[in-house]
Amino acid sequence: MGPVRPDQALRQQGQACAALGSPMYAGLLARLADDWAAGGPTARVLAGHEDLPAGSALALRLLGSVHRLVLERRAGGLGVLYPSVGGTWDPVAGPEAVLGLLSEQPEAVREWLDRPPQTNEVGRSAALLGGLLHLDDALRLPVRLAELGSSAGLNLLADQYAVGDASGPVHGPPAAVVRLERGWAGRPLRPWPGLRFVERLGCDPRPIDPRSTAGRLALTAYVWPDQVARLERLRGALAVAAAVTAPEVRPQPAGAFVEDLRLREGTITVVWHSVVVQYLDAEEQRHVVDRVERLAADATPASPLAHLTMEPPRRGAGTPGEVPVVLRTWSGLPGDGEPRVLGHAAPHGLPTTWA
View 1 (spheres, one colour):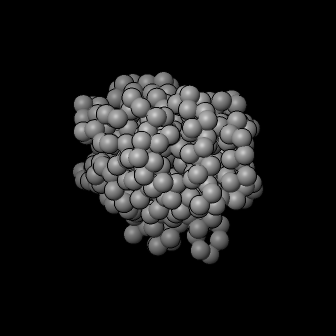
View 2 (tube, one colour; view 1 turned 90 degrees about the horizontal axis):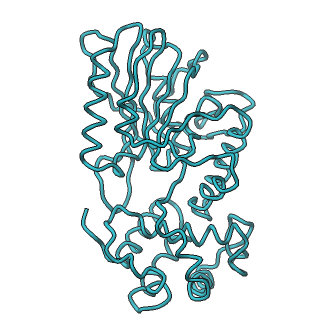
View 3 (cartoon, helix red, strand yellow; view 1 turned 45 degrees about the vertical axis):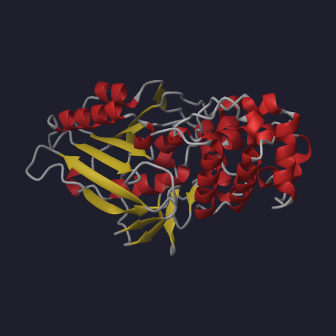
């Protein structure tokens, strides 16, 4: 994608934040865009980043850096305005306070501008778990879960989370710390009491250790501060990650990771990814698709393959909509590989509505 002016990037992200339920960031980004156009502190902080492509998420880099300073108690009095640390956002005073921080601590804010935003949206586990429940009875073997773009690997722990619909809990451990309440809508799903993950593998160009202070800080900083439910889900998932054996997240590109995968008899290998493809270049996208097709050729009833995705239908800026959840399976039998649109998810995963 071609370069986009910073004020345009800020406005586009603000529109997305408004659509996704963050009035705080929607209003803040509109004010920062105006300030950039007027040559204010925002323009000085973003100097040198004028030619980034549209997909670089410059606005989220800037906001994540400011939020990080708030979380580290390095943002002066800004914390009293941030709900993530117990404050209350003021739509008038808040943006002016952020501009004050950009003016007073420009270098501190710039520290994270070269860092791509990384969230680990635990809500997307609702789509993953529901997708697994759509596997045919013949394919309900122990699961080897392989995730592209794993970040901190929190969705690799999806079997530790509970998910429910409007009627209450439906699937998952009764005492789960992470509860995706009203995570499912639409057609009721049949639980799979025997769901068991026997291997969890992930990849990410820049994996985050969820048990480290730096890792927890980064994951929290990129969550929008007025979305308290997302923050609570993240904190719950971090507690789970601290209490169990951490999944292996390899510092690999997606193509190389999938190239290394092999099927294993007596298990179903599930290749899963959510809102990742838009961050891969065209060559790597082709590499992933080609390797999945080659893996599929090796599938048998005893070593089947599933490809489960939650990916937006097109890449680009604009108002985000529902994201299709698509499943393909292979077991060496006729009819293998036909894509099934199982339902649609909100961009952060909740709710996922099953067709």
